[in-house]
Length: 127
Image (cartoon, rainbow, N blue to C red):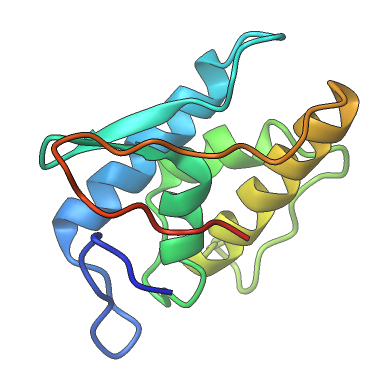
């Protein structure tokens, strides 16, 4: 799938993508029942949060503690990280967030969202 988000380099995300990931987590937490999936702004384009999480599925960088806490507070079971410091990679967090989005859509009986890009960019299909 072609993406307009920055690419990972050998499993590492550029800081712009890491910050966008944090914005996507914040947007998820602000998502009110009945509203469509939130988007975050990247270089003048609204990007659905699921697209941001999908872009980070292979990221091996360690998620900052504050972001990890935002992810784990939504879990139904306590997070048991790998290693003594309960580290979580962006990859793990991205997969958790993708599951939470799917759960949310199912709870609301929502069909998968179609996203509209601005500024004349070609739309990428979501899966």
